[in-house]
Amino acid sequence: MIERRQFVTPGELLAEGDYNSGENTYRENKKIYASKTGLANFVRNNVYVVALSGCYIPVVGDLVIGNVVDMRLGVWLVDINAPYISVLFASEAVDRSFNSRREEMTKYLTIGDVVLAKIISFDRTKDPTLTIREPGLGKIPLGHIIDITPTKVPRLIGRRGSMINLIKRETNCQITVGRNGRILINCAKLESEALATKAINLIEQDAHTTGLTDRINKLIKKEKKESSIHAK
Amino acid sequence: MSENLGMVSKITQKRISELLKQDKRIDGRGLNDYRELKVEAGLIERAAGSALVTLGKTKVMVGVKIETGTPYPDTPDNGVLTVNVELVPLASPKFEPGPPKEDAIELARVVDRGIRESQALDLKKLCIVSGKKVFIIFVDIYALDFDGNLFDASTLASIAALKNAKMKDYVIKKDGELEYKANDISLPLQNYPVAISTAKIDDKLVVDPSLGEEIAADAAITVAIGKKGNICAIQKRKVGTFSVDEIIQIINLSKQKAKEIGAMFLKG
Image (cartoon, rainbow over all chains, first blue to last red; front, side, top):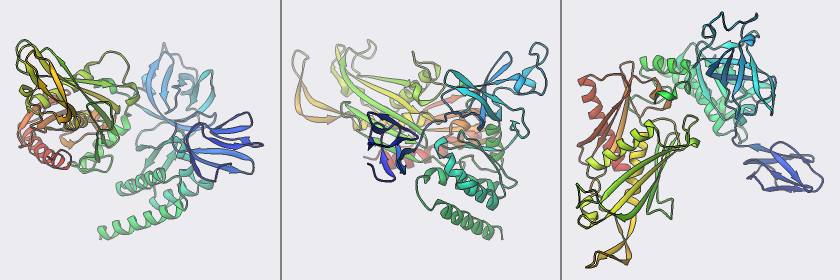
């Protein structure tokens, strides 16, 4: 049996005997091995690995931020930072039936646009499909987009949103977190935007450590103090 | 590299130019700031010389190979320098396997020109038998991670790898054959060119452009500076234009940056 929060590499033996194989692990003959590089951990007899990095695996219902990379008749192809290119049907973009012979698709979205979308279907035999037909979803007109490793998104959100709400409250920024590791920041002031970016980058860098919320709080307070001195 | 369109979204490009109006850059650098630079030489044991250069998120690995062969007919007394670039698909979603495309060829030629025109390698010393047998130096550049400015990273990695390269000491026998000795010698390096790239985005000049800035740029220019501060090579890319004043400004900045980088990584 491994120790808690031990660093493991793929193929490393984690536990032997009556254990359940959790996230990022696999079982072979009652032995459980890691399938990704990360920190191993266990809760009762569930063994799992918190991956240090990795790509985004789509889950139905996830909110994602994607780049439109290509167009076909009636569909946009959207890069959502996953191993699979996702598909956004024109009928999922407008609130009525869409006839691509009569209408220009570029009126709604074109290559290089960024969309906030929701995944409506995905399994490993079919590419993920998206929808933007819900309030709040659709083309993102402005803002600053930063990328973090998708596996660190839960840490950025924190327990019941504690971390992300802290950043939102302290910087007065609107922050939208895509589960695929893309984050949209909208701020009235450039300084707050830079501060939010700095905080998020620190979370990504130190995601595996403890006491992170306190450190982020301190960082924001310190930076705010400094900038208010400069302002005077 | 116009094929990279779509890799960086329109709002990010808009953001880059908005921030530049206030002399700020998207990654928080100043206009004349270089990204963090790291050079690790001699990582590949089986190559004659090697170097890994990390420039922000851009990563370039260079290997040097030394062989004997025949010289070109127009330069019978000179050794041969061959620079090759491989943009491997793992570096960027836009790089495909297969024969080198336009951007790989351009990169190879810019690096080659920097080394050749600065006379970094004393090719005369690499001649074994005039017109018959010379040393051929292969510089193989592999882009491992692409986040803009492969030109500067590749040139620096190539020079670091050439500097790191070792070959067996030799004597030339009467019949032109080589007899190798036990000790190692370095390649005849006499100059250390440093390439500095600058991009122009909406009338602002930024040094060491990242991927987003390279795509948003109207024009970009790479200046290779020798160790005495002389210009060895210049290459301009993309469709935009530079004014004479801008060129002078770029050259002065490049000289200063090249001096800093050369002193840090290529001294001696």
